[in-house]
Amino acid sequence: MTRSIGFAAACAAALVAAPAAAQYRTQEPQAPGYAAPNLRLPPVDARGDFVTPNRDLTGHAAFWNVKIALNVAAIGCRHPGSLRLIADYNDIIARHGNLIRAAEGAVIARTGVAVRDRMSTKLFNYFAQPPAQKQFCPVAGSVAERMRGMSSAQAIEAAPALIAELDRPFTDFYRAYAQYQVDLAEWRSGRTVELASAKP
Image (cartoon, rainbow, N blue to C red):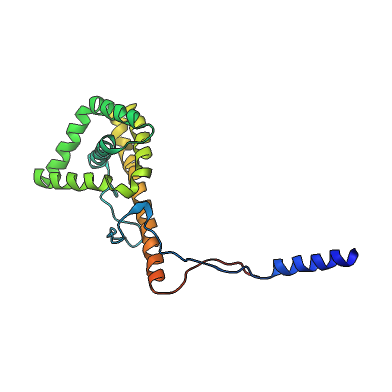
């Protein structure tokens, strides 16, 4: 009996000490969010952060982008809580009408009407990117709920932080897609991709 226990213990110790077999990717990597396989990502800056139309905004410019983001969400988001999002957005339009008009006027004064229209179209398309909607819609609902209860002074002050929050689902998607591109290139090169291994 003692010999049997000793033999079993020795086998267990050998299994623990031996390195685990490496696992390898056997299927082609899939793009996150069912995105197209040839998507072009925005450029990155010296810190490695993606350059988006919502970076480093303040004042009316930040508020204007928040308004467009919530507009896109109210039109396109269909998730648990989307009816509340639509109601909150309508309340924001009513409550902050003067601020919205002031923000639009400031954007036009800086860029002109034609450029404002092109920028707004690009922003609509940006916030409507399908692969990021699953993460974007709940964030937009949270932002709309909070902004609904703000005064106009509070809304303009909070706008830079809110637009950064609304932008995060898209930059998170871009990072995931960049990793997918790396994984796909390695897979297509014919090299197996080691997923996990244990050191002895």
